[in-house]
Image (cartoon, rainbow over all chains, first blue to last red; front, side, top):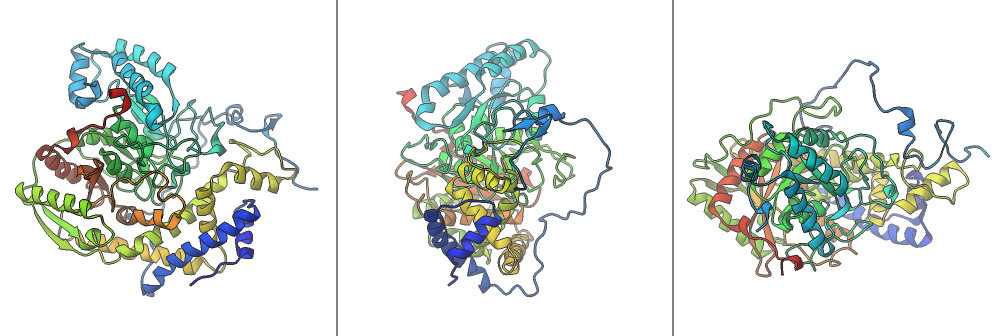
Length: 96
Length: 489
């Protein structure tokens, strides 16, 4: 039985860049605990000599030449931006 | 009688004989949508003006055009990017994403075949869910009984085809999201082999599992639609560079001598007796057609759901980091600094299930837990994949149910994430193994809800799946039934 604490939930929420209300933290603590407890079913498996799957097909590194080509123009890339200025994406201040 | 009750080939013949026009086909779609979509809510965005203008242009270009999909009305799941056509993934975060800058590779390929995009289809937010109840806009309803869910996450894609609103559609499948709604709505849905169809322009959920695939009324039309979207794409480095066969060729050559494997784990406790009986009846049909079947074991099946949720959520937590409110999407007005802007925009924009999966994935990847959860799940994935490889040494195809039960009622499972997750038990192993899976209608419950038969094949052996599915379809009548909606009364 895996316990996950409210403090852990708050820490993970910060890592995930989510702001959770107290109510959401409460609910998430219970639900994540349940899901993780269920996932611990995997501990029944002896996987000492099992390689983890990184890709389902026999695939080697896929390389291509690093050549410039026509793609989206910067004025188009800005079309869906919530805020922009002087041809750039604009965001709130990073430093106080 | 709707034009969409005809087979693709029959419609093409009528077009070329000038008995009908592309404009007729496109009007058929929009008229039907106007008559019944208020009952099922399959569409999020309609492309009416552009589609009707395109139909007129295509009517001028018909002569000499050899595209097998010429002028066919198609619906696109709303996580597949369409240039200039709003693409929301059914999320409030992308509510204002009205002007995507490019077409997904699949959409580009369809456009070059002169299909007509009718609109964008509802889904669980970011494809996370199995009932379309996680859409932030509306519940799509099952055309066979509107109190029931259509399945998910491609619920809009399956419901629209079943209701005759479009001739066919595209969905995406990460753990069952094409096959399960196809089964619940009584249509044909394929999750192709991982890598067969380009993911470029599919808004990523779990990149090692996601595949785009076709949803249609008939098996043959499914093969034709798949044919038009497959093939290597330099824009997707995981897209496989393999020779593509002609999926329709030999589709009618039958199943004599076919060796079918039936995993005992897929007919165990938890599978509704009606579903089990429908599958066993289908196996009898295959016997009569000259195939043989034997019970086999996929011993690691019971671990698939746990491995699937750890892996898919881990990948999702990384993939959804791009939704930060900087370049597109909805940004909060409330934040005064950058970190709060990220946090508040994401918290306002994402629904509960999306937050839950991001949290689970972030936890499974976080320092101190990575080996115990993420890596353990990757190892379980290897065992699950090996199970399939072993069975395919001796058998041509694996057959079982697509879902443990027919479509359940709206609201029945939405408050309990684990109960909802458990429903992926028969579909998620297929994504983990990367093999193809096809769901076809195989009967109805006593309540009149469709039941789906799942055919699972070897990597890149979609051709066998289609041949096997076609033989069953020709021998049975389930696919000929249609749901009755208010517009029909």
